[in-house]
Amino acid sequence: MSKFKKTLLCGIAPLLLASMLGLTTQAVASDERLYGRFTKDNELYTPRNYREWVFIGSSVTPNDMNDGAAAFPEFHNVYIDPGSFAHWKKTGEFRNNTVIVKELVGIRGKESPSGNGYFPGEFNGIAAMVKSEKRYPNRPGNWAYFGFDGESRHGAIQEDSACSACHQQHAEQDQVFTQGYPVLRAAKP
Image (tube, rainbow, N blue to C red):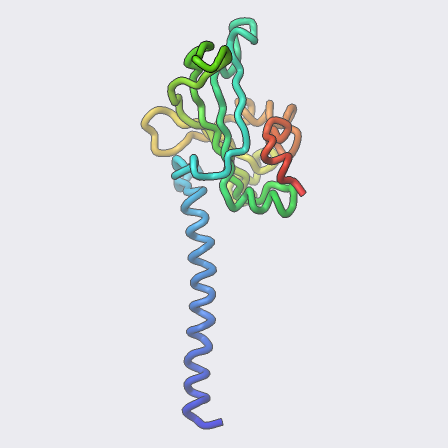
């Protein structure tokens, strides 16, 4: 092999490898920026474009079906980040860095031209849960729960007693209420 060919191969091979690694690193970094950006204190920034994620289910807990005092008298529309949904479909498990967003929507009323029922009203905000061994090693199941107040750019980490305790006691799998999310049940291998 000529000296020129050796020099060319020795110069191109590292560039190709670096390019491939760069793309891989860039894709992972892009995934993390899209679905889970955090403050230096590991608080979750408001997830971008979560309504474009995978919708996994919705529930409503009206006051009139809960002795006038429902804990959450609103609709909960729930979304999971696309990468975690793809992982779920392959494994039936929630991967490290899973982000699940719960959109909170008030109840507008019970009458509509289409009939009686419960109908969504105004958007009230969001809550989220994130699974991360690195960020939350001391949280049950490595899940942290976030509440987003008004104009805040990031959610505050909730005490374990606020969310995690109920999720640990009542969620069907890994602190996620899979029993209420037909999309997850249908996609599980």
